[in-house]
Length: 397
Image (cartoon, rainbow, N blue to C red; front, top):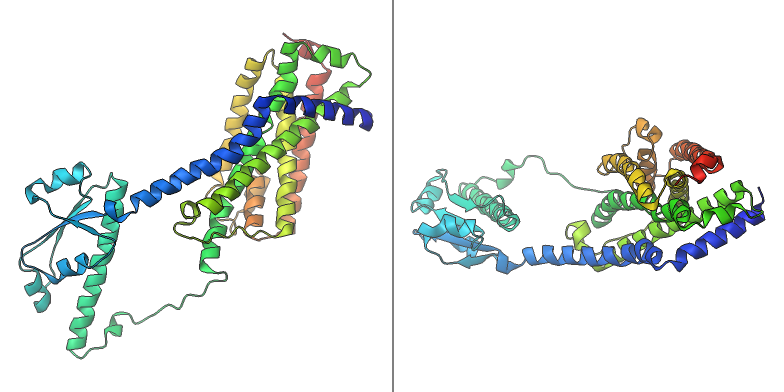
């Protein structure tokens, strides 16, 4: 094998891939542009749902209670007047989010310290209605606390007796930063692994089965370049495309963070994406290794396939199998990962990326997963080499 020949094959395959507009569109532009657009509209939908105009509530209060007055003073509630015999229908069709019925003896019961029931109608199948109910429930709880405090104060009792233990919160990071890092530790590893799996796929399919269909693989094999040089040139070209696709996806994600922070942080406006240079280096290293492992394996499958369509059929189960451990690790706490996960394919990469995103640099974990990744690459390249050296596979049509 000649490194010079490998470099020539690599340049040739890479230029062929980027000459194809579909590669640029699918591999780079779609993740780079689609993600910000998608998250922008998601954020717009969340903001629209949270607008006061959608927080429609109706209050039936014949006794002119203090609770009625309390709720009407809240700026984020939109009080509507309706016919109360149609209350359930109006909630069902979404015209009203929540209907509250306050009994006539409400004030009398409050003054006498008697527990009072109020009826609240809402639709738990509606996101807006559930959100408004949660807000109303919060305000009613606040009103109840005020009543209790007033009652105790009038009786000469310190209201603090109701809360004998008070918690002074102290986080190791700023509260918003903590939320940001938690969200990032879930989303960034997920996108990196998904695009490391799917990013090399179009190139692998094209440089294997695609070339067999076009009849361009046989002339390449008749050149002075050894099969091993051709194989490595193709693997490196596929790996580069996978890396670029993953970087484009993360770039699109970062743009989404900046444009629509609320959709990620649950109201955190200043979404911090601060990751240390060392963490970025580790993330990039495992992105390269994951892309190479899957790129070589997908190329092996593509070479085995008779046609482009058959290659797509064969690689589909591979991507599905890769998604299982990826989503398995999605909600796992990056600072409390069991050691077994560092030995499970793909789950181990997700584990390292989660730790690193949260700022945890565990050398032992990194070395363990690095060893596994090297083993995966050796196995994948060996399979691809085996396929590439078998005449009945190469000329299989």
